[in-house]
Image (tube, rainbow, N blue to C red):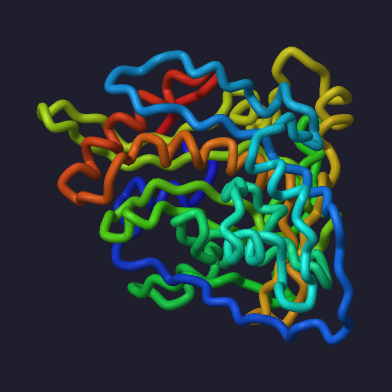
Length: 327
């Protein structure tokens, strides 16, 4: 069973060619001069796991067991640098920009360091660039608009938004959906028909930014010894069940109390679109939970090793507690 049409297209090999990369423009520099001292940035606690030739239990807690706000537990050098800097909000647009310029340590996966000083908007393209990942706009309707041509863009037509960016209830569980999505893809997968990727729903209303467990799409691959792994999608069983209207060891009321509402809506800095766009900060945290795990498998950028590393990624993801594999 395949719950999402974009994944169905990948199964049949529709994705090929280079991705359409979203380019963002820089905003105007603030006119008013002031300094912010001891900026407290909530860092998302992420563990980076070493690559193993064979699968092992990584001890990653499913996001269903995490606090909805996912607070930081880090107290390392990077976190100390982040909180001890005096931020110049005139010279720089967002914390990571200054930290990088001054050679400070910081967690590149922490998207909160890429929120603008003036508006709080997320510089999503700058964040993706710093990670070494790419982002692609996607909507089913625009992808199929011209038969035989692939189009990667949002569908923001007013006549369809009420139907495709909305809240709904399934078996008593409150959820939201969006036709528009960001695909986060590894840079080294640009020449692959099906890149390693994760998605985040993009909404036009902040109240629609509900949590949704990450799906990780991994293409088929072969290791250097000739053994193969088929195309697969990975998602925590808790969220796989939830997407089908089933609760896991709880009632619908329990689910709704934790996830049946918007959690940390984040406005995007996205000047190429003439309207406000939002994503769930919870969903960004969930994506960044897996990014370092995926990155740790790819030890170099040699294209001859890419399939071998992707083969190992299947084992890595399958070893995570509570992970569901499906196609």
